[in-house]
Amino acid sequence: MGLYSAPGNRTSTSVVSGDYGAASCHNRWRQPPNRGNTVASEQIARPTQSVTTPEPLAPAPPPEQCFETSRPIRTGDVDIENRLRLDGVARYLQDIGSDNLAAFGYDETDPLWIVRRTVIEVHRPAVWPDRMTLRRWCSAHSTRWSAMRVRLTSTADALIETEGFWIDIGADTGMPTRISDGLLESLGRTTDEHRLRWKPLLPATPPDTDDWDDRERTFHLRTTDIDPFNHVNNTTYWHAVEECLADRPELRRAPYRAVVEHLGPIYARDHVRLRTDGDETSLSVWFLVGSEVRAVARVEMLPREKV
Image (tube, rainbow, N blue to C red):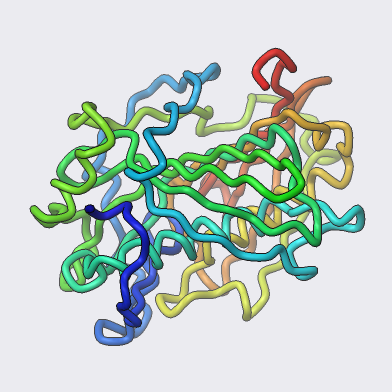
């Protein structure tokens, strides 16, 4: 049936995790932290212009062409109103990515992946104790990276649409590597777009203004936020987004879109500051270490006619 058929009997696991410039690793390739072993930005063309109004996410193919799994929502992933948090969604996306690879043996040929961007569109929120169904497929790919869509639905009619820009990483080099022939063939079964290029959706630098004092806060990293490569795990960025949304609860009213784009890794002992800017319908967050922006996030309301 292919990569996105029902899971097989394999029990091995791989890890798809981390930010741009950081890869969590399979035990077999575990290495000590190395600040020099990061993904070179020149490996992916970085256009100067961002796309402020992204195109709609790609529609789903027939269910039999997708990889599907299910899981209950746990209380550790919900907020005070029992809604599934954004960091919970990001964790589910990492898990289904690992399960998808392991189910068909690609955890042996393509074990290491990092995410450059995650898009989460909450059309109808998931609420504990819902049971979630996750359906995953490829919406576009090149020879070294792919856009992976995941649709999350629930027994209580939740609908969350997501897309991640995932980069295949060489276990020996720590750099983008060619996707294996078998996996490329499987990815191509659900898309005709085989020349995927990186195009940022968000501005990489905050606006030029002198009044940041009231819109900047420290984001304290914890030991539990760090992966085996001494980098901050992907879900931690979503913790920061949730922290900023606490001051903008109106943006949580569905439908809304949340995006995180990674520009470079954040390390275990980095001092991170969050700089925020927004208007009535959106909030942008820049993750700064010193004067360098390492990531950027945006949450914005969606028009109700999109649902």
